[in-house]
Amino acid sequence: MRRMGCDYRCLLIPAALAFFYIQMRLFVTQSEYEDRLAASIESENHCTSQSRLLIDQISIQQGTIVSLQEQNKRQSEECRHLKALLEDLERKGLKKLVDKVPVAAVVIMACNRADYLERTIESVLKYQSSVASKYPLFVSQDGTDPNVRSKAMSYDQLMYIQHLDSEPVHTERPGELIAYYKIASNDYLWHYKWAMDQLFYKHNFSRVIILEDDMEIAPDFFDYFEAAAALLDKDKSIMAVSSWNDNGQKQFVHDPYELYRSDFFPGLGWMLTKSIWDELSPKWPKAYPFSIVYIVLKSGFYSGSSFGQFFQQYLQPIKLNDVKVDWKSRDLSYLMKDKYTKHFADIVRKAKPIQGTDAVLKASNIEGDVRIQYKDQPDFERIARQLGIFQEWKDGIPRTSFKGVVVFRYQTTRRVFLVGPDSLRQLGIKDARNI
Image (cartoon, rainbow, N blue to C red; front, side):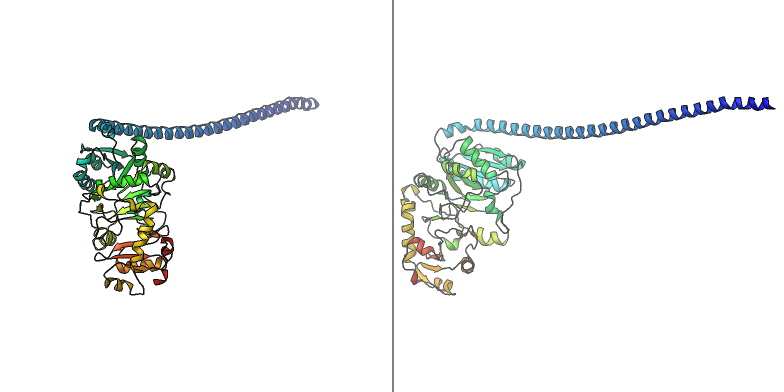
């Protein structure tokens, strides 16, 4: 029995050793497996991270490719338009026209109204054809409307330029009229600035006349601007010459020879010089009000960007001058800065002062010129509303005003002067107590 017990013990010892060995091998194997599993997970995570990074890089590259494709498409389009423009200019002999030293380039600003543009072009060509060498005609299109481009390109008498990008106009202050504001829109593309830069710097014109695509011109339009060009050259205080009068409705105009200076920039049918544009271009659109000369009316709307009641009240009744004035024979020296204030003051001084809430009624019953003083902007707007003229102010001054004075004809040859609270002092008129 003792021997059998010893045999069993001898067998248990190797079995225990074998068991411990197996357990140790299992433990080592499990540890190796866990290490390999952890390494695999880490490797998988790294691969996932690298895949995501690669996907991001591919997305960026795809975006870059799309951007480059769009840029290439845009540049190809620009090249195509420039090639067409070059062929058009060569065909129409622009160099020959420029060699004749024109008075001014005339540019019609267009966008997407082909029918309006056609009417404006026909109006301009009616009087421009005989003086084409003095006034090379351009159409500048903002945008890519095919009908406008086709219409402009159909005329051999003009040159077509195109501003390819277009953004909506945003006024800086609520209530501003887009039809007038758009000439100096704070939009980053600035069609007007682009067009003037093209004509002044690329084509090297000394003067440019800017027209809207919904305007017609008077018979003496070009004679007027030729005479006005001499004023611009002599008097550096005149920043622009305009053929537009905001108060040019038929009931407020009478004398086709009448010219005034104004501190307000009307922004339609105007001419400026390259030297003035050199000053304005870097500051555009913050570069006005201007000191300008304007006239009764050498250009006028046949339609407008401002529809409804505003158009019917202010733009539709505009009287386009139908008298062909010989401006070359007229002495315009009274419009020079050193003479005009005295000239204008003499006219205002002779007008009969009237006052009271019924001043407008009194003005209707007086034969000669009258002057009515307003105290401030609300008072001016009240009087203007009664008379029917423009009520709007900009940058602290009313439309068409000079030294705060707004002048217009009222029903007959009678002139009405709306005089600001400080206007008489600025004009050097001493009899302010008579108002």
